[in-house]
Structure formats: structure tokens, C-alpha cells
Image (cartoon, rainbow, N blue to C red):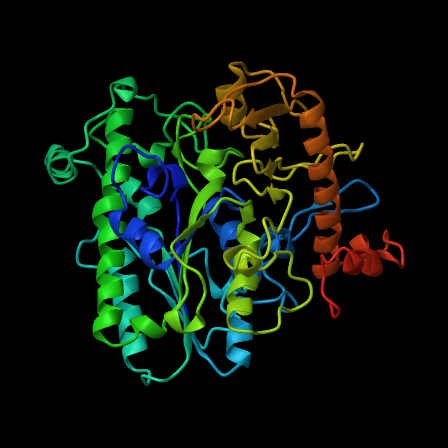
Length: 490
């Protein structure tokens, strides 16, 4: 079982949909000939850590988010380490390990680390991240792939294994300059033309994150137009990601392992080019940050239907139970996702009615809303044909973030920005609309608020403290178990 997770890979910039650039010919070929494409798949978060939490646990990322503690005198205490996956939370690797499989993870960013609990279940956990500005360092996609080859080549031909490969290249590449020679080379190799509507020099913000301007870390000299940034992104998908996947699959085939290997390829989150307010950055609750590609290529011996496109709504929390179900492993209690095999086999038309996303990176925790009418971080609720989102751009004390959205230095701490987008009405990526969301938006808002309240209680159970638990009644565990939000042994 090979799980490949690619950061900052948005669905609508791949060849798996109707994109006008042929960025992923190998991925498209794999999906059409041997795989199942889930064309309506959504991440639970537009940020690195929570997105990986959901894939590896089958749970909403809230299970790993340590809550703030509000003391009786009004003092708010924040944890030293915000993210940590408790031992009691289900793990993809642990289930494979318990069935005698060899397990290994090859990660490409320091935040996906042992100190946050990501290594649980992996017999080998290799952090390949490093300084990409040093050309002599074997980091990024080449380093991850090489270390995976070294590991899998030591295993016996009939030995069962599960590997988790993490590629961060599409997000990390912005810190290096983009020279004129590189731009010409990308255009010559890909044939992509710069888009006239993006032919302008974007402003550079003095702080990160910031709306409507480039983050300083992603604006190295020489200055580039937004069209050049977008071309660089698409060229990297074609020249780095897709071609390296081609080589990876061919190597497994030459080693005689391909026919026995099931492969899952997923984008952990996307990236924006201004469609929802962020330039060359991630963090909004819109389709550019949350709609991600998911391709499942089952090993032929599993006799599952392939070469199909599944348009039913899918969340990244559904991936872990799907992989376990493929191997006939029991799905542990407390998993929030649903197996997608009934969709693959044609037994069901859908596995969920809606999906939930939260945990954006740029809304820091403030004092909990005293009226309990809205969560602190913002969220999105996605149905098959629409997405509702609510955010607090003025929350938390990052002045530049608030000013860049509202255009003034006034306090907008309590102001919300809501959006409701129906894809059949507006197929364009992103959403900058503000204003009334009507009855449909209010319905989805209530779904999200209820989900947020439940997940807040899950966090307090999984990360207990005397201050948090003293305010909870004795029935909270039973209520959460009944909703399937925690397992039988929290």
C-alpha cells in the first residue's frame, strides 16, 4: 500500500478535470486505465498539519488541536504545542502494523514530526525536509523518493508493506528565485502561454499572511507577474510531480512490485492565485484551497472496478477507512470518515451528505465567543453542488491581515465574512463575494456550528485538563460516542 500526499495540489490545476493545460498526463492515464478518480473530494483544512492529521487518522483535525483553557477568572491559557495527536486516536499505520505489515513514512516538512505524534504506527519514520536552497542537499521530492526506494528494496518480494510518502515541493519552491532562463525553459518544455488577465505585478505584503498581496517569503527577487507565478506552479506539477510519479511507478514495475501495490494519491490542500483573496498562499475556505485530487489505484488482485470517475462528495477523513476496508481490516471506532468502497463497487450513490472543513492557518485563537454563536477559526460546509464558508478576517490581532481585507485600521474583530457558492451557477474557481447568504446559507451555517461545538467537546475529552472537564456533565462521553466522534476507549 503506497499513500502519496502532495501539498498545495489543487484539483482544477490538474488534467483530471477540464483544465486547459495538460499538467498531469501520467496521473490522468493512471486514473483512466487502472484507477478510480474521486472528482469531488475535499480536504478538512487549508493548511499543512491538520490536512495530514485527517488523512492519517480518518478523523477531523480537531482530534489533534489542543484547546485553550479558560479559567474562572477569565484568564486564557494557550498550550505550548498547539498540535498533538493523542495516542487513543485511530491511526492508519497502526492498523497495518497490527496486521503484520511493514510500515514507513517519508515526510518532507518539519511540522509533520514525531513530537506532534505523527510517527505512531510507523516502524520507520524518516524526515527528509531540509534547506532546498542548497543544491547539494538531497531534499524535497528526489530525497523522499530515493529514501523510499532504499527502504522498499530491502523488503522481500512477498512481504506486505505500507508506505506514506509526503511531497512538499509545490509549496516550498516559492522561497527560491525564478530566473528568466527558468521561465523560458518552462515555457519551451510545457508550451504554456502566460495568461493576459494575470499579467500584472502583485503587491508584496509587509506581513504574512495577508490578503491581496504576496507574502514576503514568496516574493524573492526578481519580481514576477502573477501570470509567471501561475505558470511556474503548473510547470512544476508537470515537470516535477507528474514525471517523478511516472518514474516511481515504472521503478515499482521493474522491481516486480507494481501489480501487487495499491496506490492512493491525494492533494492535502490547494493554493490560491487571488481567486479567494490570497496570492500564492493557502488558507481560505474556498474550492481553490479545499478541492483536491484523489486517485485510488487498487492492486489488480483486489478485483475492484477501475477506470471510473466518482462524482459523489468525498472528504479526506474518508481515505483511511477506505484503505482499511480494501484490506478487509476492521475500521476502529471513533473514525469520522466512511469507506468509499461502496461507491467504487456501485453499491451506493453517496457515502455522505455534506463535508466539513476548518483549521485555517491565519485565524489565531482568540477568547472563545461568549455567546457561543460561532466558532473562532471559521469553517466551510460543502455539499455536492455548493459550498458555504464563514471567516473572521479581523480576528486575533494580526493587524495587517485585517487591514488588507477591510481596507482600514479599525477593529473588525467580531465581523464575519460569509459566502455561498453554487457551482452550477458560478463554475469559476474561488469566491470573493460578500453579502447575504439566504436560507440555504443559514442552513449550512447551522450544520457547521453544530459540528464545531461537537468537535470542541471532542478536543476537551482527548486533551483533558481539570479546568476543561470540571464544566462538563457526566454524559458527555456517551453523547460523543453515540455520534461516532470518539471511540469506545477514549
